Length: 381
Image (cartoon, rainbow, N blue to C red; front, side, top):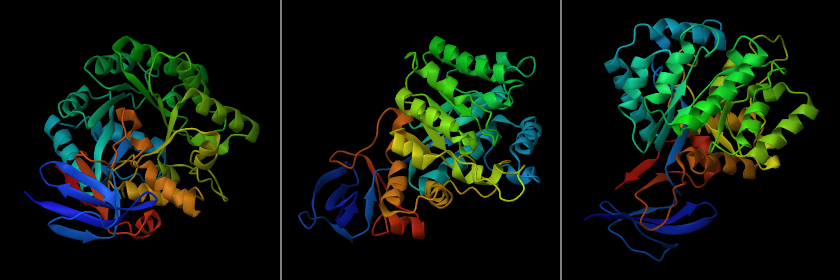
């Protein structure tokens, strides 16, 4: 039996010792310089494992097959729709496994993936991989009301056993149909005992206002832990409306998942200069007491070719484009990856005796981790 002592390591705002047992996980936690072990690692940063709340494994690693020349969300969707026709079950599984291995190398041990319900083959493939660390969201990439058959495929995907029901209200034909798609997602989730995870207002249009509908439905109290991904229209909302909707987000408990890598690339494409960043207002959401997650979103897919499956990369981008460069904000961004990012799974891992996984980073604290962006030593019992 082998043990490793992580001595005088940083964990949140304390210096601690952690004794790791390869068979049992965390065997002991104590103040710095109080424990003993076989191998000794001095210093560094210790955290629980990270979680990914928003990625698309069905499209991962396909970006080179259909480059997005305009850089727009719409071209990405169109390119993906063409690629989707040639999918095979094994190809979906192989690319998903390769992407999950990349996530693991970067310390992410839980993943929530969206899967396009336009391909029930892909839905079935990802559901075959589903376990307590992999959740699947039934996501209608091209909407559910825009064309015949899409609603039926979406409903079938949910019935196949997806963990959450998705929608893309800003992509429906009209504002009213977008709102109706949100309500339909909640009704379908209630029917199947699933959760709701929406692509919500991923646009620069300040008139895109589906988030308030999602909050209102959440306040009915029938679906637990609702997620609204992207919410980039919030960046462009008039200030009075932004204040209203962010207060509603906080009071409803809807979690906004910001995807900075994709959205700093996809948003602002219709602007001249100056161009909008197009991210959810993370700093103001925090100030309102709202829950925020940080997703990587795309790993070398038709929307974003540069994905690495490193959530630290996503955090690094958010720090820059969100102006979250105070010491406190930078630490909070990194800590989000192992706290709020786990909320869609129902629990947050703790670095305590008995924990079966943890990460050691060769960095003195979260700020240095953001600067160096190295890979962790992943400890799993």
